[in-house]
Image (tube, rainbow, N blue to C red; front, side, top):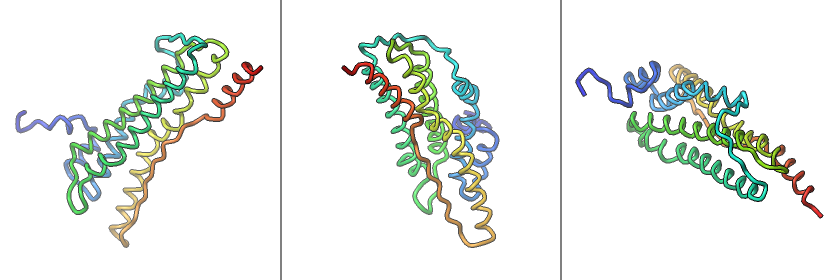
Length: 211
């Protein structure tokens, strides 16, 4: 690498995130994470729109009725793993990247966290596509559409949380420059959507098999 080239992790940043990483304004660690996260989401806008449009552009997977319950349980286990990965990223890796109190954070690690959060979104969208493209045999054929919507709130949170959190952060920093120090609370809850619709379909299936 020559003296004029940026490190790879900086070269991957958008203009606003790069400026934050280089100039390091107040609360730059938080700003860098949130802006990098926003940039990663924007790069996935076509995939998010595909999900919102309920398109089925992947390969079809035949799921026989005899194995449908096991298939559904496996897909739910996969989704749980994606959500747990997001929770882990928001925990220790983020805190370590921000650095100990009074010490600067590690810009490369912060950018890595943003990239991994985007990878979680990739996992959610890929999961939903597989569910939608699967062909479950009756009486499980109506379950797929309900199951795919489990990630709806999660996808929305990945879109809106970093934008809202960055706005609150910048407002708080601005107020702190003219008033007393501000306390900013930012919490992201990972929750599943459409549980009622899924449970209705499962109850309908149970009634069909009841004696």
